[in-house]
Amino acid sequence: MPHLTHLGDGVLLGSIAGLFLARKQSDKVISMITSLILVSLVVALLKSQFFSAWERPLTVFENGPDFFFIGLKVLRNNSFPSGHSAAIAILCVWLAWIGAEKRWQQILWALLGIAVCYSRVYIGVHFPGDIMVGSMLAVAVFVITLLWIYPAVSKWYHNQSSSAQQRTDLIAFILMVILLLGDIWRLYTTLYQA
Image (cartoon, rainbow, N blue to C red; front, side):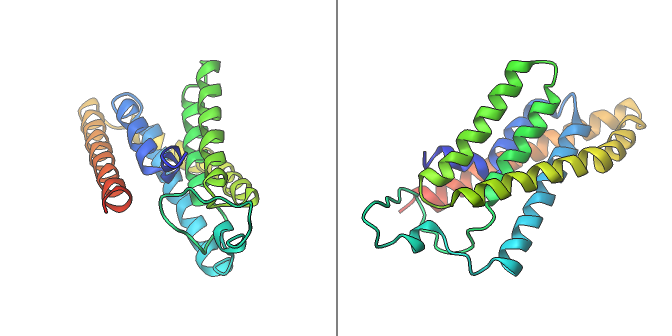
């Protein structure tokens, strides 16, 4: 669970998904990454301006006999809402929407999203309410992005010449590689080095 939970940071799963989609659906990848950035900004604003004093389970139940913390990093504040849950929810909703013709893929994305959200409670860094609100924020941002941002990005992308589309696809692919390698390095250096 401590390793599964890191799929919720958004960058790892987003960059992996983007690598597979960038060559054929760059307009959707750009919109997906835009919505990930938007939901991250909303969560950061809520955590820093409105709910900064909300404590995490480790602080609340620190002396309780039935509380077990198995996270890799000790977190005590800024519990509400869950940023990892918002990130994984928005990515899984996007990926389910992109693969809408295959029901089994939608189910797999939903199960992955639920598993990562559950892992945040399981390892002791969030309360269930943090997870639910983070996920609901993600769905709201997805709808806003799908209604207003994706149509504009799609129109811009499809109005380009084929050579310009290929350049956009290549740039998106390179950015996804950079994000993936950077996030793997960040996870390794911050979580697994002594």
